[in-house]
Length: 198
Image 1 (cartoon, rainbow, N blue to C red):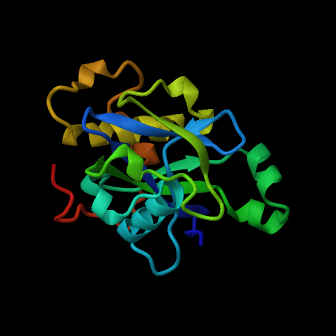
Image 2 (image 1 turned 30 degrees about the vertical axis):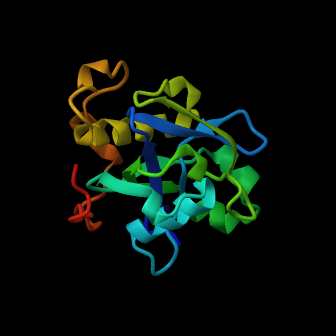
């Protein structure tokens, strides 16, 4: 399911523990680490897709987490042509698909670490995980996703306690300076829901 500009609707998940550390997953059979994320299926809301992906990739159920906040609008990234060639044999699909547009959710784990199960689905996304500081080292993120990670973390930081301050952000620019990743004028912005309270 692509929008008219070639972006697939997607959700990203930043999962916090009680120390404001974030869940970091290692891709199966690879040396790359990332946040959980996945596509929004036809008929799903971003929140429904988030809960489905959370269970499929991390093994957590809605009762294991609390929604702390979410990004206001879509954040986008383009997938480089060399990745598209590897993933899609259809030239038609390559020509129309540009990348992902994402709503990012900030969740707090209210269950325990033992509730996390990476093999909750038949096709696991991760084969290892760990907790890392909220302000992750962006050089560990695949290059074409770095700016979206920066935008998502910068925006979601407003929901955290005052113990984590914006000046700890050693990379990037203020969110307002990177608006090109946001929704276009013709897209409908997503408003935060009543459950998205700090």
